[in-house]
Length: 152
DNA sequence: GCCAACGTTGGC
DNA sequence: GCCAACGTTGGC
Image (cartoon, rainbow, N blue to C red; front, side, top):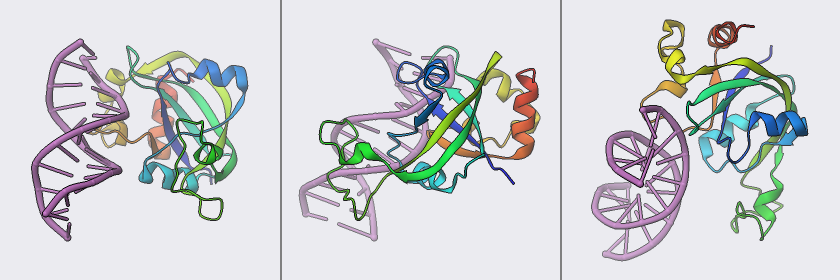
C-alpha cells in the first residue's frame, strides 16, 4: 500500500514549476529530525502533496511521487554547501533524502484557508497551531479529500 | 515586515 | 538535565 505524505517548500527556493522542469530531484536540505525520519520511511510510489509555504497564499499546488527511497544526502558532506554538516561522516550520515518525481501541477491550487474549512482535514498536521514540520504523513482520507478539492 | 511558535544550542 | 537565549519558520 502506498503511503501519503505532504512536503513543504518555499517556492522562492524550490517551486512545483522547478520540479516540473527537472522532473526528478533529491529532496535535500531537510534539517529536522522528525522530518528526516519521515523521509526515511518513504517508499518508491508513495504519493506526495506538494505545498508552497510563505507565498501568498500558502497552498497545496500539485502532486509528486517518491522515485527513490532515502539515501545519505550528499550536501551534508559538501563544505561549500549551506547544508554542510561537520558532524556527519560517510560512515555515519546524519541526513537522508529520497528522490522526488513530478506528477502534476493542480489547475486550481488548494489554499490553506480552504483546507482549514474542511472537516475531514481537521487533524491535518499542517493545520496545527505553530506547525513547522516540513515533511508529514497524510491519511488516505485526507489525501483523497485534498485531491477532490483540487478538482481531480 | 511583523511576530508567535518552535527547535536547537550552550552555560551552568 | 535544565532552561534562557537565540535563530528560523511561516502565516498574515
